[in-house]
Image (cartoon, rainbow, N blue to C red; front, side, top):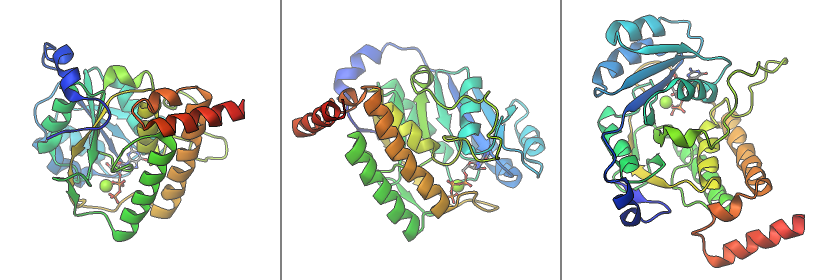
Length: 285
Ligand SMILES: Nc1nc2c(ncn2[C@@H]2O[C@H](COP(=O)(O)OP(=O)(O)OP(=O)(O)O)[C@@H](O)[C@H]2O)c(=O)[nH]1
Ligand SMILES: [Mg+2]
């Protein structure tokens, strides 16, 4: 089941209904996930392509992937971080719809059709949510849930969105929409001091969620159940990465305002919000 986020699905369906079956690219960022890939790759449904973006793994991630799914396309990411890996995968993808799929076993392949359906029915982005009825998580701790809720509320306030799960990695997007998001260029060199380039880390989902809203794209939330990681350890540090997400929200708010995108993003917000945004833009001018 999909739930409307901003647009009225009934108004969108007629225009899209005649589209042919979309080609689906599954992009999997993976850093030391050999054992998990052995279990998840054979469980994927048949799709146009599966792209594994290796993050300088020191186990046999690439060999394991090729062993269990010989047709997998394998890339090496250009810098560090999950965000950079995803953008490398987006650029290599050739399908109509790109599904972002974690390699740790937390994403259920059986949910892929729901993400694809949401896009076929008119969304530009199908955003997974653990907090919609029908969704859930075996994995999220109380601390992370509280942090995610705070960051989610802040984003909704500052960007005029109505998200229920800001920091979730299971999403799908129409590939043509990616060009409108100006994501960090994977061909740029890494910072000389070794610092993670902004957008290359776990803040990538927040960057995506803010930019699709700022660009006025249509988002539908899809209830999703996050399973426990099968093997190995998380790469995420809740405090360090939480602060990166917090800074991202303020940066994206500024970026949206500077680009004069915000009135579009707030097109369906209450009139009082639109007035407030206009007033703040004028006072900044
Ligand atoms: N290529 C690449 N993949 C990464 C990198 N960091 C994380 N990943 C992958 O991104 C996915 C999500 O990372 P996880 O470490 O599971 O983090 P998370 O899902 O946000 O957090 P948990 O809920 O703790 O699992 C996994 O498939 C990781 O292997 C990286 O630097 N490069
Ligand atoms: Mg995970």
